[in-house]
Image (cartoon, rainbow, N blue to C red; front, side, top):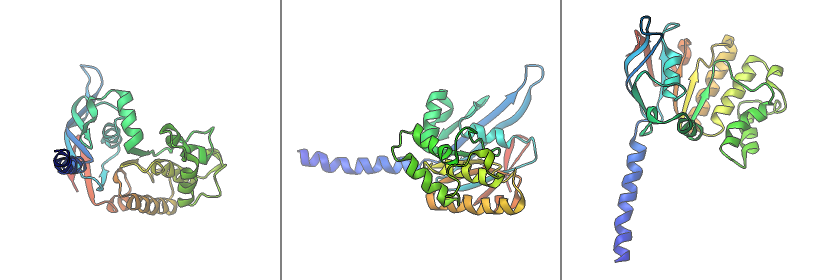
Length: 244
């Protein structure tokens, strides 16, 4: 009888695993975001729908002020929509409180900010170690060192952000985002503050690391070359996404 129960449980476990891995990485449904008072409401996003499959790379482009960064923040749970929902790997993200969303971000997401967002009082190594330490990783220092080496900064471990160039700071930011091996990586204008040559190196680095980790990549950019590297390009216009 016990043997029979054990045999019957195996397909069910596999079925559960298949269901988990079949969820979209990101699913936004009728997403809307407005700001302002009742008599002066500015509608940034309206009834926006987006589905991103696991392992896919998607670029979101659009004019300045179109709401690209707002959308990225909503998808990453950094902000709440006015209406609609965001589901992350089958989890209804929009319905979670901030602590719960932060827990999901810490375990499943990485974020590369345009302004780097490095902590000025921490060295490059300490900045990359931070998300690993928050996840209670005992090997945080080793992983951070290995990841910084991958982005070509093995000789910058002890340097503070103010001692690094813009391109070096962005590489530290990318290393910090990739170090925990996130399932989903968000990037907000990752080449926006860089010169053309440095930006091209950052593009190569971003996609080489992403392919190596097989993570889902969602980025917003004005950089056409960067956008073309993605499998899918969407244009945000009038509060909604359009295929490019």
